[in-house]
Image 1 (cartoon, protein in one colour):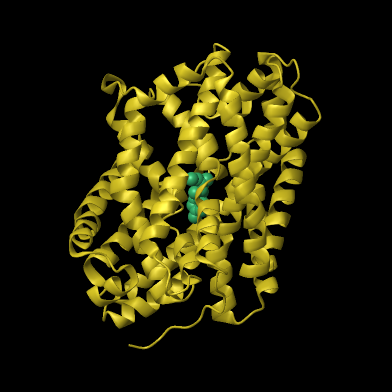
Image 2: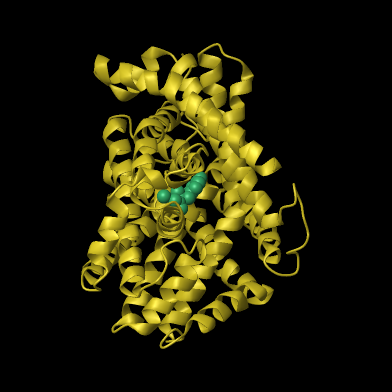
Length: 454
Ligand code: PFF
Ligand code: NA
């Protein structure tokens, strides 16, 4: 077996690797999306289904991605090229890597714009702009931001500059440094906010909402939302975990790392839900407010409560750190590819790629104002098209083929070498990868397509 050895970087320790992967996983998906889709889908029963999706589909795919990355020792494109060759499989499998590097870069083009909203809200909260604000004021604030291309461009640029700067400095002196401060920081803020949530008077109602399943509120559509979100929230299917896995030392346990990543991401999503709904209920607000939950409902609540300035500012600082540590991971697959394949310096790769994606991001910005009536794809704005193309097509497709490759193509020898699972655990993993994941993803995939054509 030939040895691929394209990755020149290595994480300093197993712990730093887990923090970086947790930083990638924990983001807007946990703090913004999970609470609002849970609110929209009635709470408890949805949470239970989501947990099932993480365990049965998310965890197996996460394990696969880390195995393919570490055994491939290269960026997702060349790692898959290598695996295909070593397993005497078709070159088609390289598609997984291309799909990932491209997909994660495209997610970056809208994720940085939304992250920019969070930075703007942090700055506004810090300046006391939400103190005493009323419902109309909050709505105006939000629509005012979205209506202003210049404001959006400013914050988008701030986010892209920071992210690209970090990535351009490499793994040890770039990503690790940023992660070492952001991930502990966000955990600390989360705990402070949790303590605060217990004092709001909405705490027990929040727990009840999240943890008392009422299956009459669950729709088939909600199950599909939960499964799709399991991929997005764990950063899987996009080669991000693959490239992070390629920087892992050979002697550390992939199984343990994957469990930690999945637990951290899940617990943080649940904590965010507990905190947000405690605030929502304490203020007699609606849990099903949709995407505006984070940017409209919360500032209103914070504006009205004692300590609201402090805790509101802290809350948006949390969102910013979570979003930035995820954004960093989204350009790493493409940067690693250009670095390893074209032999450019890391700085050159990161800045040229970042510049190009920053430019594409302008399309996202304009989707909320000047181009809100311009349709790029099936009646969707540029932003909605990007979101649909990545979240509903490229991401499930990537996850599906990773599961199939790991379940049906990759040699048992490599798998055992990488995972060292007991026969029982390995058999369970194989059932998940060969059957559960493919069937589940094909259902989601098909239903998404049917949905979008209606
Ligand atoms: N997992 C991130 C979140 O929950 O916000 C988002 C994400 C990161 C998606 C990286 C995809 C990705 F490749
Ligand atoms: Na997440």
